[in-house]
Length: 398
Image (tube, rainbow, N blue to C red; front, side, top):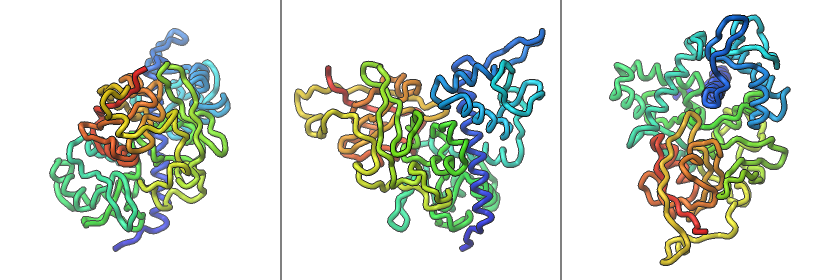
């Protein structure tokens, strides 16, 4: 079998980083539209549609903890300018200025450059969304050499699916598409040793398009690559000014008050440890070290057993939540096991809107009973399921 050359690995890594910038930029654009910061504005007797004021956006980024200070916010927006995500409405400024100047997302005015690379990225995103949204998806958790990988598929299996769905006309065209996706850092061989083939070699999606991106990941390309596959992928919350040795999750308590849940550093997981290895080192797996070594401190006041939850007369009530994922995921973190509990909830995410709260116990996911499962398995169920998530949770009666 053909092994990947170092030049191809480097190219795929660079393409992967560009894809991360595009995804983060699109997630920001959608949030700004929701927050009404993007709107038609009038300046010097002329109306500029779908634009934002740079100074207002800088204020917003700091206020919403997307940047720790104005200087960082400016650097973040400059990164988006450098990658042709945003621009000055009249293209009179090539840099981002923290002033009352109007800027706009190129996707909002039709000037976003649809290069060959961008078209491959958009094709990969479309295929990913289609695959994770269908029942009996070919994307599954699989094991190779005693290591489990998420969102995996066999090369021949992907080719069969592409032909069946009318995405390509023949197997040769499917192989060419698979190779383009791999060369652009969208998929990869699970141990990064082979190019794409029509065979039983195991591949996986390297990019999880639904993961919530933190803008600050874009400032350091090595950090962006390392963070791109957090074990919390579909539920990842915005972190608040992480300091060496720990991270913080923004969560919502039952009282709706916001608190910070501190977490020990996941030193054994490269995606959060600051490991200096390149992104082409062994990808993250679903096999994690003991909870005490890698998980945040539990928000539960005391351990609760499955027997206690299900015992007659127990002070718990079951609720059904329907959570429709948005462009950046569902917005919660599951932790523990047998039973699992809700560790954190993004106050601005779909889960919070559906009524999810910390300390609830996960009873079922899309009709599958899960009280006996650990959080890695539940994560897999959610990640490979549809965008609309139906969860039954058990909540303590106050």
